[in-house]
Length: 360
Ligand code: DP6
Image (cartoon, rainbow, N blue to C red; front, top):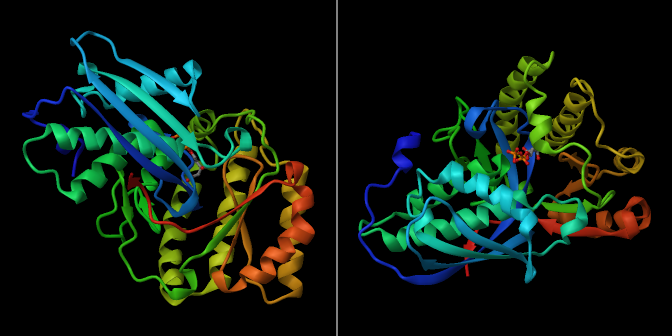
């Protein structure tokens, strides 16, 4: 597939107005995307677990209008008008217009809500952009006379979501999604996320992710700025090579169910991501003292028990605690007794692996 394959020929059906509602989850990367080229193409392949409960529901209502030179839309979060969300969506519309030539023919009302609090430090861009991209694909499907296959639908939704926010392209499917060409993974592409196509050991089925909300404030440095600082970064090339190698290693681990090896890759990836931030110019730190307290507690707990608990981080201070389903009881006790104290107002979210976007 190339970008051109996502440019539709003509639309033959006429639709005056209507609406579609999709829910789409967030995802947590095991091997991280950090650094991008032009047009939202990642510098290296990444792989993530799709989440289940952290999700965005978006209703896209549309009504036909006279074609003009500008986009016409309004955005609501939890029924409240959000004009400050508009620039991001305007940029998204500009990027995807060539692939969705109907965008200026309609007025859109975008009504969105998240299952997680907006100010939780959990980025809603992955779930939000993938939900919006899915709604737009539903409209394209209705406008097209030729049949749009489910495979094409998901690929193009992921392709569009990527143009909104890179990691969003990994939220359409589950339970493991790869984005970025990797030589050992058939069908992997720089343009969209694909479901991991190989056997995965039962140890990873229904894997758990408890998200510890260490800092719910706005990040001091946005992901977009952070990605850009990988241009000319002294360790960038080695890092991009390492991501390829880590995915190769992870493929064996996923097949064999080797949880000790899994932990090493996942934690190393999290710390490498933050090491890249700390060695950028200008340098920055997104972890907080409590992030480190939690990491040390997890290591101590692992040392004294047989647990296969581990952590990962995204571009912020919150900690994702990952563990196999059969450890739920003990690990939840541990989290409540020892980790919750480091969360802002004691807040955390219990989530697990999920299966992607759904039409409601
Ligand atoms: C650290 O997808 O938020 O979570 O493409 O600029 O929207 P943009 O960036 P974004 O980057 C998130 C990167 C990460 C790691 C990952 O999810 O792979």
